[in-house]
Image (cartoon, rainbow, N blue to C red):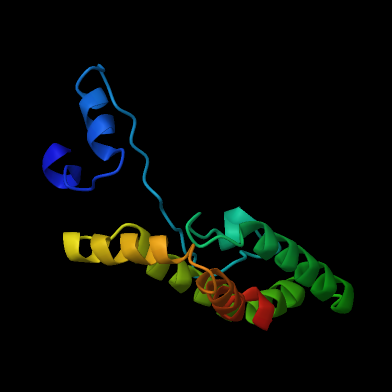
Length: 150
């Protein structure tokens, strides 16, 4: 861990020193499951079980609410459950796939592979608190919102 993360700075050196004093360390991976189809027959997972994105991408609660509302609309509109589920997936899947891709891009930004990219990330993070920059970033993030384009 020292070889891979030792040059990160900030509190990382202290955390790595603490790692030497414990018996075991818990690691967790941020994973993203993408299903080829959202339903099998009349069965469909909902929320994170279906549209799960990385915590780095955010919008999980918004996606779950939007998906639940859309599913309810389709079930109400179509008498056939399978037709409703197909239409539900057809309506939402493109937006969810864009959100999945956004999560992958954000992960690369937050957890870069090399020192030059970490330096750029850290500088951009510091600059985000400068007057005027924070508002610009907020408006850019709002424009990028996948669910806002449904």
